[in-house]
Image (cartoon, rainbow, N blue to C red):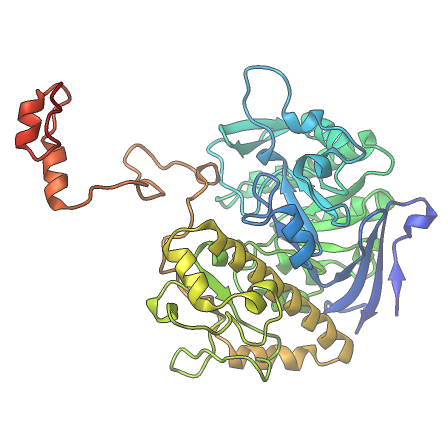
Length: 466
């Protein structure tokens, strides 16, 4: 039975229609369609690609348009604001009806979702206050007040904005802290609703604490703010079965910020009724040089099954080993993405070994294609009524986790990582090194002001005569 929370034509910018639900009174998989004015419709379950400083890593806007089928993009405000000597962040000065789209050169058809923090977020050394949270920018930690966040939402005009949430990343909150989390989050949401533009779409955060500890906050959304809130952003998918089916918020689209680390976790969240996902493991796999190869619920007949020797199939192929250096087969013989139809494993392995950025570009195109087909197969399975059986089959066929990383990967973006102290090892290997042990020994004995004659004795170039 279809249900809807309104259509754009009825004066709303967003509409979500539940197309199929086995039992509305029980948490379970469901099909839906998310419609946003001026953007393409998003069939759910689906995923939003995770960005870094407004960009899907390794992919340019034209590549996104030509070779991906993602539902939308997830952006973090902390990627765009930073401590500055004066003025405002450049993104705020961008023109157009959607400055966030203009600044990031995002394809016009893709919906944009703005959150205060990245997914996954780096834990901050200082806690949140009654009016602000701590964020991690490219120049370090700083405070983001709810008033400032509302101003940024007003100026950047994302298609969807997630309200500020009082979440202590990296630490389990105590009893007193839990009581504050719901009150603060409710107040911040109310302020955003009262001061936002009329057409701005808001997703309300659902905190990663017990349902009873935030029931007053969620009941307030259902009873008083149901017409102003267009969706839920859940930081813990386990809370879905606890939301009463009688409340209005069950008809809202649900976005997972629970950071699933494997396809099995995605399937579990879908089984609970999750609609939209952010999937950080795609980027982790690409950076690790891993080509995803899983299919739902089973490998395609033309695919190449990669076993770990025990019986379960791997979820991906590590492209770093030299065994791929002479392989002229695609990353996945059943894949129709640009990478698999235009290049072979030997070429991708060569690019990774040579540290050419194109290697990670090709892997990112392929991995996003695999995940798009994964969600398309999930929707088809739900539609046919075979989802539970297909999940069991997938669990029997594939391993539970992705392969381990064996290669170095591209240079790590340091502003994504919290420093652990002065003795912390560097995240990236040196770009340049000594050519051999003799050179290393010679360079270690080098004194900056030594005469040329003494340098010659240590094996350095002879002095040029005038």
